[in-house]
View 1 (cartoon, helix red, strand yellow):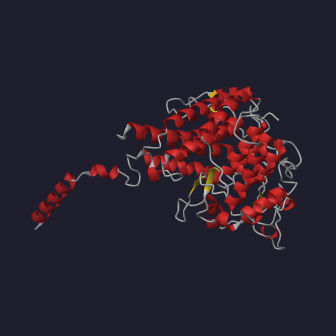
View 2 (cartoon, rainbow, N blue to C red):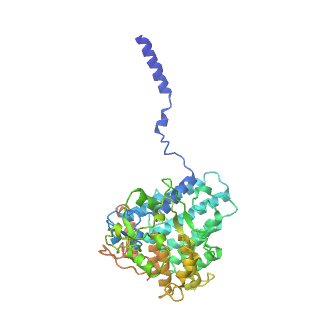
View 3 (cartoon, rainbow, N blue to C red):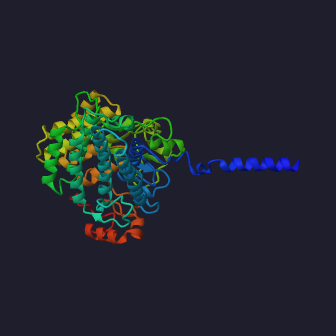
Length: 479
């Protein structure tokens, strides 16, 4: 009997040895091969998540721009950028989570046997997304690793001059616009914003080109003028009477995780009551009888719109909160819209650029597009614009104040873009936050990890821009 058992064990052992054990090292949830489309989808989502998030470890721009105020933990609204290493987190989000994935998507796309014209479309769309990512990095930090970035063989990339990098972004957009062929396919449903439609991406590229151009207008007006006029001639987002806003570049979040609105994740799913309206924006909107108030905020206990003071602890029960739709899981994220483009055109007209209209008309279009996009009516927009304090011809101040103030309102819930435009146009002039730990930040300091790993290049860049401080104005911030 023992001999029989031993024989059976031997047979079973031999059979087990013949089994292919190499598969134990394969994780089915981490495939060895991924498609360029899946990498693009992931990078696009991460880009929109980064600029949409309300997580205080990553995106505190609604607080800096006094759209929201914190209820209990108030460090971020007092400009504390270092406690949670916010510059490091934002840097990582753009370089590691967004740009790295876009780069890998481009690399893999070239190996997938696509037709030449389809590949050109896909690469152009991917590059437009990369340009958008670089735009945010450059406007947040200043001189950064650009031409030598994302190279695994170079642990010490040089920091590029900001203006030089901006000019290269314009060249890249020119190449992308020229490459896009509306008659051919591209990314299809892998692109959550336009379903890969090349014509829509061409409009976005031109609109982004206009945005990049105006950002450097005070530093290099000649380059800005040429680029802005070319973008308009090629075709930016269109304003339509009645405000369809069909060109808006919005990311359609869903009710299914992980593709949900980050604000829902931060506030509702986590059960937190961390933010209320800020008094700066509610006072401005109340003074102007702004019809967007119910779309921005809830009513407080007294039935009015109110906000906490900048930098002060503001109990949730005492003030208006972010409006319910903003906190829905499927509330869309936004990169650029018709309203923003119309404001850019108004500014371009004031600068004397040939953009096919007057500043007053573009300004009115921008305000109307914003109100309609938020859910208001054409009638409410008309009444709002008829007020002497809002109408372009009678509102007080320079064009910078008129455009800057209304653009800041229109960029509600887009804190990073509001911060960029507020620094550039210098309006509205925000009050100092209570017990502020620094002066108003006009840039983010370089990440701590750059000091530890790439400090020679970081230090050189810091010296060049005038110091690695939150108060160091970047080259395009002239006033």
